[in-house]
Image 1 (cartoon, rainbow, N blue to C red):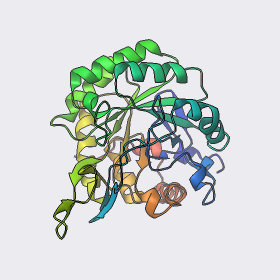
Image 2 (cartoon, rainbow, N blue to C red):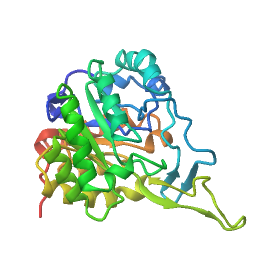
Image 3 (cartoon, rainbow, N blue to C red):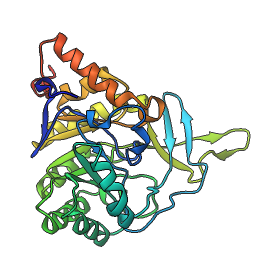
Length: 305
């Protein structure tokens, strides 16, 4: 896409050509979408979370459709850091302008080693996933505690001050603002608000949970109002840039996130429903901004009231 000043935005040190990117785990390695549109049109691409070792994920069934959404319990399935660095990241960097690498671990040491391995890579930033609700250990165990979040991010910040570090927060807590403040104070360059909401589905004929994991993460249009409320609360609590993820289906949801204080938005499960939504949202946002004689940066945080 030609350079368009109207769409530009910044997330800390990173300047993005537009505020649209996929949410981690909903865009594969990017190659799955190149037949639908030029993914360089996106402001950035966020990878599926990578772990130290190859991870098979949870047993099936691990996806179920719900009213205006989807429950998933994939469980961070990925090829591991070796394959990621040698094959996936080089291929993705050849297609996308900015690549944000999501990392997930079971222990603090896992996160530190992943960060160390990625310091000298071509990744433009790291997204520290402390919010996955579908793994038995690690991940969300850090994200539900302000103290654990601060300790982890402080140690990762010590391990690497050479790449921007975004922290992906979980909505499955009582006070997300407290955890957001802890992450910011520990050195997070930006915060991602948020991830899926923990839920479950039951087959009333079989009288069993539908998912083999029993519970899963709810995503889709149903969670947009919930995420919007969390974004509003976190925006009042911290000063660092925010990226919003949750229920974006078009410019109405994406625009609401920007107005409420997000510097960029992530599209999640709708990538599976409409593989071309990333490109469509860029065009919709451009048209809306042009019609209102606005810029993306100009509307950030301008919500009245």
